[in-house]
Image (cartoon, rainbow, N blue to C red):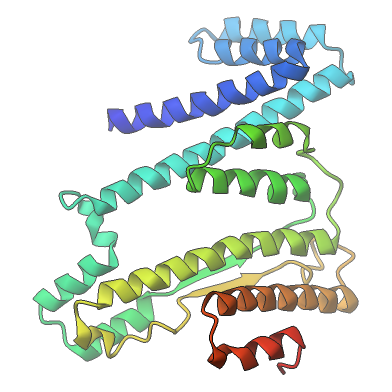
Length: 296
């Protein structure tokens, strides 16, 4: 446990230091203020912390560009640290799942199937269990009052997550994050939908990986593979975007129809990408229909 806490702490410190260093290249004064804030924030004496915060705020008048920049960078650091925590926690848990001595192995598909096989669970019971339980439901809402800008979410935050997930150095991305506005105006319906699509893309990628894991887990137990349909969707997503009239007064039939069109086009793009990955004569007709929008 201590090792896990230390790993999490080190990764959070890394993003903190690297982002402040990036900020300091163009704005050394703000960078120094941020260093001062984060150096004092763990001080056990509350009054000492308050005194430092007051000093900094007094030096940066209310409404000044410097104060606004300081607050914006602070918010970005909080967001990036949260993303790092989320990633490291998932990484630690995934490592536990792969450890045969860990109780977390019970969350692995192959472990569940092999245990059921050992206990001679009837095929029909397995099928019933899988159909009733192997199902994840997501409900996404991109409320227009959420102050985080669409650009920051899509181009900044989600992209940063991908750098972490793919173990790619994010140094260059920090330059983009520095300049992207984290707060934006009230979102339009189209911005809500674009933000939703960016999240749906991640869920789509995850669902494909999950399907492959399911296929792999069933490979050693043919009798189970014969009753479990690996092509049945096990992830269902519902979205509020564009249809939530309580959240956005601009929601109407026209906007909803436009949102449907954006979603349809994105689904088509994903299908096209997958078809091109498995290019063959059999997929040619499907590809042409998708490109020509001739599917009904």
